[in-house]
Length: 291
Ligand code: UTP
Image (tube, rainbow, N blue to C red; front, side, top):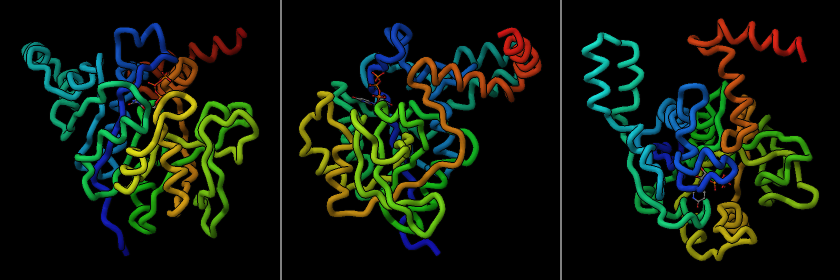
């Protein structure tokens, strides 16, 4: 039985500079870079909508107009495809034309924490789903799992994935203790990009259920060691007085905010992409044999 309000709002921060993807991101928003033919942010939006989210806020910034254009109608393109009878392409082009997406701008890229703070008015008194555009999932709908957990426990929840020890310094790492349920942990602490030993090998996977109580904490934060206002710092503070759960995602997780992760995701998604798989699978097999 559901005791807690259903999470119906999602926030997608997309105002970062994307420096790990330069030079591509000099003139193109990294969120628009495609995995084969679908922009990364479309995967994120579809994950949220499939999980039952009704309202989405995307936090954009300078040079990110393409994101709004992508989720808008393109009248001349639609007219052109219609007149040529290209129905399948028309369907793809209009799939993202009429979604309930709101936008706000982060004026300076002062960090993820600052970006989230821009969602305060949109969120109001409600819990919300936060999805980071760098993280693409495949398999179980991770947002849906977090929303279900919130309905049961009503707690701030962070999705995690297992990473190799040598990669821990790139992620927000979770200090966890087991509960009596598989895949669910209590969070004892968090550390952003640990330089020494990480407390576990569970890394924050870019999906969170947050509550509005996080906003006053974010407001009070000063920039951390990175010079940015870190969401992790706010969660550490929040965790002093509130329980936070971690959910270990059993599906596949790809980090597409940098070139290597994007390459791997593209290969994996190509293996079952209806337009390319028949040509790609024999090609990649032959390539692998030749190495
Ligand atoms: P990242 O640190 O991965 O994004 O932030 P970035 O800053 O764009 O990337 P690099 O490190 O320079 O390559 C995680 C998420 O938070 C958003 C990003 O767009 C990304 O989705 N973000 C980050 C903001 O919206 N605003 C910021 O000031 C920083």
